[in-house]
Length: 301
Image 1 (cartoon, one colour):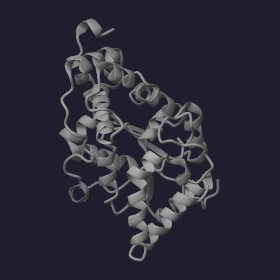
Image 2 (cartoon, rainbow, N blue to C red):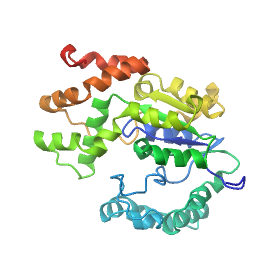
Image 3 (tube, rainbow, N blue to C red):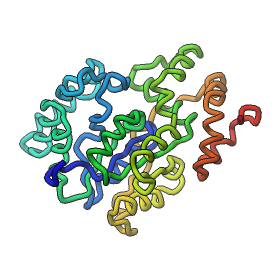
Image 4 (spheres, rainbow, N blue to C red):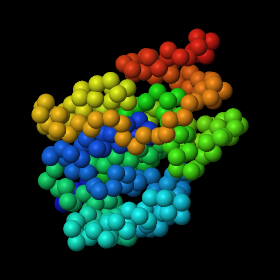
């Protein structure tokens, strides 16, 4: 690695449906912080062993990675808009050309952050929370001084929010039976995304504890100013009241449609995550202690 390479100064690693879009909207307004045009770069998880997105070969251009579903649902219209508007936003146009069409490599990844060379650079990809220890070490080898931000949400709420999001995307049946829902809850990808302590252990095993900020979705809801301030202080960015007021994103971002959780579904989620909730409360404290309120004592083992 040379000093000329512009790797990120920080990564947001998730969790999915835990407020990462809210944080992205806030940080991209900060004058000292640079984020790429695309929120989720999906560089370190571009491997078939991770179920999303539908990657095939790690060294191919990103455009080749995405299956027909993601291309039709997300990137087709986005690319049309970028290409149509290339004269007004040439830097964004050039960035997307590089991102979508050039072969992936560590050097390619660093090049995506060249436009932010003079600022605090970062990206937020929630799928990085499920990276295995080998890929986390790869991140550490490339960026030993990188800071890591991990937002946790009650795993029961997170799972139901993710399910609702998949319904919105047309990837889950809104009238799913209990067996269909159970199969999804028990799937490896879903389990990995809520295995918070495993994620914390993997990342703090590669980075020092001072480089990993663990925070809570609950604070985005209850005290967003405080959470944003602590995040900016962690990144070494300006965090005075005027700055916070100017960039604070009011309300939630990328909200899933409201669907009441059936009692049978919630009961199963409580059974699945009860022991995790006990361990989270014991180890992390804070809002994690309130997540236990709905867990019957008979399940707290």
